[in-house]
Image 1: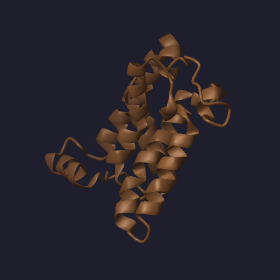
Image 2: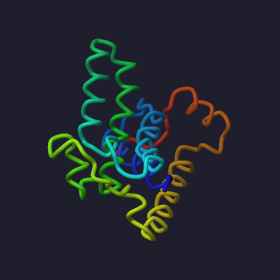
Image 3: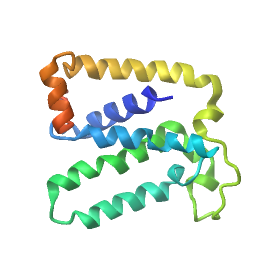
Length: 160
């Protein structure tokens, strides 16, 4: 389960913000970061809304008055928040609202693993979304790929 989170995060941020200067690199990292908890055996702190909000607050405080770096760094907590949306993390209140409903995780299953066979069609949808981004942003062109690597920006249409 990889493309589902990347594709949905990119398309959601593009659809909501329509900002040609948005840096998608940390958004992508944030959207897949909670998948690392699979190695820990289940959903933990990265699947709590508290983690994403605290991360965003820390970045906001540390980058006060420095807009370019703030705009770049905020992609990470936005990505982790979108992961919570597209994984359905809210269905486990104990983990999602940690530590407000208790400090334990009660061996909560990782939402991706708990979904089972539903991961297959979701991953195919994510792959289609990533393909759309690849084609629409003209990433087959080496110059545009290099631009994305350097800036994190994608040349996606911004008019509605």
